[in-house]
Length: 512
Ligand code: GAP
Image (cartoon, protein in one colour):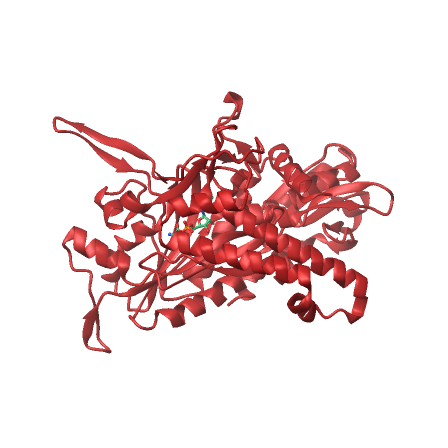
């Protein structure tokens, strides 16, 4: 099945099974805003818990905060967001559709990559085991031609971004003959900058109200609380973690919950001695990749993408990209932000934000390594890797979400084989014992086969069936979602067997 079709199916699956709904659905939705349903909220909470615990439980020098969404407007002046939190936009005059100029060019780069990969795949098939990929890539005429075009485009694009040269961005689009996917024409406007922050008014005094912004990132809430947390006896190096909503008036909102106007971030700022930041940057890259890989989707689903355009205050930046149905896409950013943010807040607030380092006997403004991941994007990456359509031996098919058990919304479904003879009561008894340990669901409607399918579709890792024999021997049938294998186990053993396999603690133990 084409990846686009898989994606469409995933979106409708999310709606049908209570994972994600368009916001204000009965009013036909609101652009790029989504609600999480009864299953989605559980998965989302589990993702957040996995991240939070990996930060504040596994690192004794990281603490959490929860800062307000409304913040003093000068913060956004100091951070540079008022003046420079812009995207370069371009309109197609025929379709009237608006695009991010940089994204159009990035898509063009990806097309060259696709062409190269197709040549390699074709050759690999032709030569079989004798195929030497490295040699083919460095000698094949067509591959070299595509690679040369890609490299030239890449260099030109990086320079235009670094120089903030909007005319050049437009010229690249023209020279590459990039067409609007809707109208198919190359009839483009100029490229303009567009500020992504939402603003609103606070208060209504005689002097008027104050313009404030909905925060476009949670990070600034951490920076402006640095002094408060530091007085809680934290010593450099230390980190502050936060999970919270962020808002951006995205020009091109697309790909479902990949790019939203209201979304949630999990950010951690790690404060270090000046000069040690690149060592910590490397360390955090490793820690974060390990966190992702522990979910078990396969190492080939991840790659780093180092930034071509470094913000003027950053001295290193990379993205962790995940293989989504629409290609490798950023899920998390790791940035070495120097002491820019703290210095700016020192300047704009007039308060000293220096740290006295007793070991060095000197004061300095700490440097910062930031790890920043979108909850919704993480959610999408997990759902798209977990979604599977399987053909079964008996000729039937099933849709199964192969979610990591620790993140699954429901861990265990308990089903009486029939709705009588005391089996429902026995099933309820099992749930009453286990519900304190993990999320259980009771289901007695329809045939057992249909009930299994329903649980597969929401990713429940285990199902328990209570039958007449259970009343005699206190044993139940335990079915594994992925293998569909069934085993007979004692009810008294259920908690022992399942708890470990579905707990976030077990997942955390694999990455500590
Ligand atoms: N404090 C740094 C920062 O905000 P960013 O790269 O702009 O960096 C970090 O955002 C992460 O937030 C991204 O990797 C992505 O996962 C998520 N994110 C950013 N914009 C988003 C949007 N419009 N919708 C959903 N997630 C978004």
